[in-house]
Structure formats: structure tokens, C-alpha cells
Image: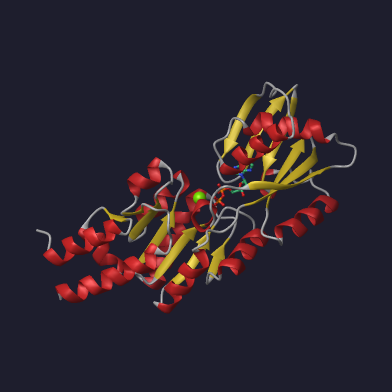
Length: 292
Ligand code: ADP
Ligand code: MG
């Protein structure tokens, strides 16, 4: 049976917008010593916007943008939605027919248009010889500003790149600071590249980060953290985060995250407010003291 103190703490949490799916999760939070955060949609708002478009010398920008919009139209990725919106705002007319579409989580998307293969995604997703030094240099400069680069390859060579920014949530810095005060270690897990990850990590003042993290590797990193920190929480919003949410001692989902994340999590932040996490830890500690 549920102790009155637990019941009151759970309903107290609910009033603050923290939904606990059981009293045991609330109790467990007090023991958490490390928290892993997904980047996109968790530490950041998850609403990226296009900031820069670069096309290779000799390429036609409108051709690149039209192909980009036509391909990303078929993806649900937040970067894809931002790219589609941007190309439409730039007057990309009707999207083109694409064939042999392949959407590869954590890497990018490819399709054939007029018999030519186009690829869009991160550097690992491009062919090894497709990018030249000039492209990589331009990307590096943008990434150092915390921007995410989507490379575009047409046939054998890069055709252009699109830079996007996704601002961090207004409470992210405060949340990390409060967790530090509570002695909780914080780490970001992201599929994004190292330079971008480092810029976002520096801005949010998070203790550490792991970049280039494929969806299937998030689980592995949670297990590794558990061997050092014992009790580990994971905060995420995406389908990709669901396995890590299950593996963590406490899985926390952002309220407007995907259904799968919401279903899998132990705790849901109904108001999408990260600063409820340190508050919930406080609540949990207080409750455990009353019970003991
Ligand atoms: P995160 O962990 O930041 O949410 P993901 O694991 O979803 O990132 O994706 C990692 C990287 O793969 C992205 O930063 C992007 O470079 C690339 N990527 C994935 N899907 C797409 C797509 N549909 N279009 C372009 N790039 C993509
Ligand atoms: Mg995410």
C-alpha cells in the first residue's frame, strides 16, 4: 500500500507539473547521482531554424534548396522540418518526386531525384571523398558557434550545406547549476558532432558530453554511468531515447516529447520545464526523510 507521505508528495509533484507514474520512482530520485540529458528537444527547444546556406562553387542554390526540401519532406526529424519550412519560405516551388528513399536514424536521409543520388546528413553519412577541405573548414566555423550542419551531397560531390541553430531552453543553465549544488553530475548525450556538442555543453555549463552518439549507443552509455554513479536518470524527448529511458534508474520524459518517450518514462515533465527535476529531487529527499 502507498504511504500517506508518498501519496502527498506525488500529488504535490503533480501540482507542480511533475507526473510520477508510481511512488517508487519518486523515492528513487533522491538516490540519483548522475543525470544524462539528450540534447535536441531536451536541453534545447527542439525547434531548429536555418541560419546559413552554403552552396559549392558552380552549384545553383535554388536547385540545392529544392532537392533538400523534396527529400526532407519525407522525414520527421526536427532538422528536416526546419529545412522544409526554410525552402518553402525561399519560394521552392513544388517538391520533386523522390525515389529509393532511405532514412537512417542518427545519420541522415538519402533519395534519388532524376536518377541522381542525393544525401543529406552528418559528416559520417557523406561519402569519404565527397567533402573537400574548403567544405570542412566552412562547417567547422559554423559548428564552433553551436550550429548543426546538414551536409548535402549530389552524386559524388558535396553540393552544399545547411546550418541550423536550436536555442537552449531558458531554464537549462539554471537546472544544471541547481543539480551541481545537489551534487548531481550532468552529462549530455547527442548524435550531433563534437564541435557543436562542445559549444552547447559550454553554454549550458553541463559537466560533460558525449557526441556522435548513435541512438543504440545511448543505452550503453547509461549502463557505463550506472557502474560509476549507481543510480542514474535519463531525460529525453524522442523515440530514440526510449531504450535509454528504460535502462536508466529513473527515465524522465519531456511533456511534449514523442508518445513513445512518454509511455516509456517513469516521470513526465508536464510543463516541459527542466528545472522541475532538481525540485523533484528535493521533494524526494524530503519525502524519504518523513518515511524513515
Ligand atoms: P540528436 O541526438 O541531437 O537528437 P540525432 O541522433 O537525431 O540527433 O541525429 C544526429 C545527426 O544526424 C544530426 O545532427 C544530423 O546531422 C543527422 N541527421 C539525422 N537525421 C537527419 C535528417 N533527416 N536530415 C539531415 N540530417 C539528419
Ligand atoms: Mg531529442
